[in-house]
Image (tube, rainbow, N blue to C red; front, side, top):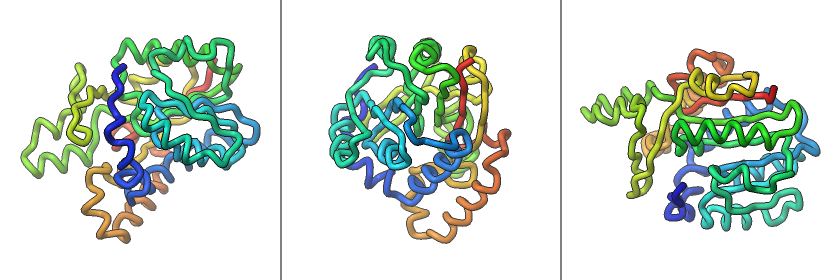
Length: 261
C-alpha cells in the first residue's frame, strides 16, 4: 500500500480536524462509539489510519491504552507530538496490509479506523484485513470502522448541480476511483454497509449508523464555515437519526461496530 498522505499531514488538522464539518462528523462518530462501548478504562485499542492522532488523543483521555498507527510517517510524527503528554498512547508507522506481521502475539480489545482509511483497500485486501483483525482481537473483541459508502446523497446532489456527473456517481464504481487529495490521485474503493457485513464473516454486527447524512462532506467546509447555525441544525438532525440504519448506506460515512464471534 503506497504512502499517499505525507503531503497533506501538515495541513490536515486545519483542513479537516479543526474544521466545522470535521468536528461535527467526529462528534457523531464518538456518539456511536460510546453506544458500542460503555467503559474505556484499561481498554487496549489498536487504531489504524490514525492520521494526526486526534482520535487517539480522545480515546486515551477516556482511559484507554492506544497504539496509533498510520502508513504515513509524517502523520505519525504529528500524532506523536500531539499525544506526547499521554503515557497511554504510542504511535508507529504501519501498513494495514502488513497487520498480520505486526506484534504477532499482541491482542487488542478494540481495533478502530475512522473516516475512510479502509476505503484505500480493494476487496481482496479488505477480506485479508478482516481475517487478520480477527486474529488480533481478544475474545469478544470489537472492530469499529467508519467508512465511505457506495452512494452519498450530498455528493450526488452537489456534483449534479455543477453538471459534474462523473463525480456525482463516482462512488458506484466497483473498480475504484482516483480521488483527488490535495493534488494527488488516491485510489479509493466504496463499500455499502451490507457489503462490509458480508465480508466480515467472522464477526457479528452490533451497530450500523449514518455519519453525515445531513452534515455534508468536508469539501463543503468553505460554504458552511460562514453558516455555523445552519451546520449546527444539520448536526442536530443527524443526532436524532443516529439509529436510522437505512440512512447509513447513503450518508457521507457510516459507522459499523462488529464483534468477534
